[in-house]
Image (cartoon, rainbow, N blue to C red; front, side, top):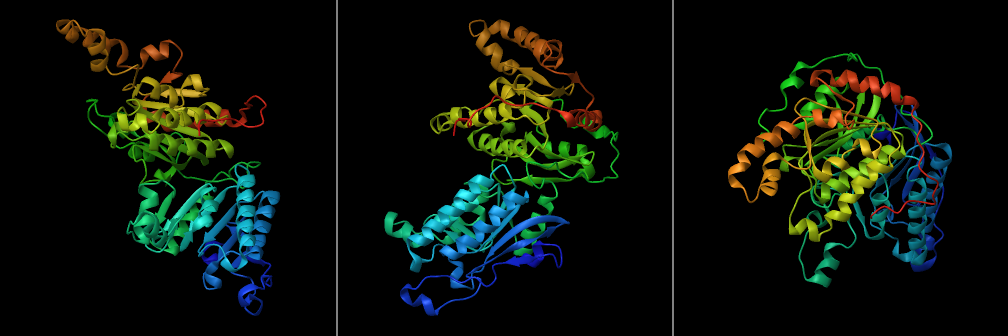
Length: 470
């Protein structure tokens, strides 16, 4: 696995001769060098990365005090050197023979995960079982990838679930890749096999910086900066009730039509991922009209908020495509905390100091318009296409409230409301938009602004830490 992940002949292993120090339950005569985890440093595309890979063939990959010390050493070095940490997880959990020492080892790793957060990128690949306390280390990292049908993440296994709740469930149903990429949102992606997972991890690293102290290396592209795609001029249907795919819009704008999507199968009403514009790595956020009209709900808000905060932590500019009818109404959303969860996305955009460019492609209604990288949340550049509508709500809903007692006047009022707000001009006149642009020119305009914003300096007020609505 390590050989597939790293560039050929670049891996240097550390602590290969370390053995555990446990003497209970006959363990003193049962020692294997390396103690169930391989740790070291290597290169991916010529850039330094630190790696630890759990070995299930040694004590089931169970974590001992010595095992934890090896992992902590790698993480400490990664923080000092300013290089990403990649963990390949394949473990049965804590080594029971070591008791509390094993639990202390987990806690030490968790502490390193927290200290490294926002300092160096952390990527976890779950390539086998990962149960009990072991699940919280991947959960604390930036990205979690799983392998379909072979990897499992759960706090308590099927046997414990059966004993406590009398519920019969398989490992795959409880914590398989499908569960965590579609339902829980714990994992950011799933792949068919180990080889694909490792190859895609190498690709992801190309979009990321070494640490929060370094920029992302630009990548040469033959895609012209001033390329105009005339298909964008008609990609948004004139009928506001007809959907279109925001991914098609993004691919027509970014370099070479390529985007590395994150959490593709979770909260599909919003799209997040990495792409390049003019060779520069950017974070893409876009409402997806194909799914629930691009409405913001609890899952979409949390998904996008975490992505925005990652980009801000590692100085990756944000490009946001806005087509949002508002927040999803209903008792289920309200009772499950849409106010708190929606505020996370608002908070993420508001605190971000990286370059922020937003393009409103069609509707931007209500509080959701404010949330999606609006000018008032320190958005640097806000563009709109001629098809954009920025308003408190759609024309039909507005007139039903304003003219609730005058049914005959609603038709006339709806036409007036549409004339006043179903276009981007009123917002542009008030300075909430920097320009109304031709869709085919979007790529050129974004790249121009990114070049200007390379020297942007914005600092938030001094504080111990923030208190975002968790």
